[in-house]
Amino acid sequence: MAANALGGSLAKIIQPLLLNTTTRSPDKPLFDPLKTTPTPTSSSFFGSHKLRPISHNKQNPARASRRSATVVAVSDVIKEKKLKSSNLLITKEEGLDLYEDMVLGRAFEDMCAQRYYRGKMFGFVHLYNGQEAVSTGFIKLLKKEDCVVSTYRDHVHALSQGVPARAVMSELFGKTTGCC
Image (spheres, rainbow, N blue to C red):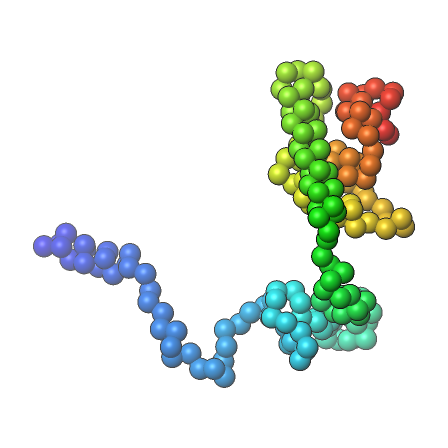
């Protein structure tokens, strides 16, 4: 009998708490720390709202506002530059060039993996397999005044920038003919 009573109370403890979401008042929405006050022209895409700087220094709000930075939505930057949607499309030739760059990056990384696992390449080899589109996409959009700084998994960055594969591979083997 005690086991039956214990089993009944245990069932109550294990059951999940049911929440009634229909009784929530629209005047009191759920708290969302990431939600900001959207401007009339902003979209609801995450991160596309303009954010207001929050003053964490209640004693001296002027001092706190000096430390805050302005956050601007990407969509606003695009609107400001007045890019037309036709400018964002790529041609078939450009698409093939980007694809060729991604295939080169994958083949290069596969060769690095093969050499490393055969014991021909020493040290650490951080491979970029599966991320070739990232490198191809952002490297091809760089301007002459832009710089790229990477700490590891940067072989494909160099290839996308136009560094010959032989020079990058020579660098990984520590040869003087390497690119760095």
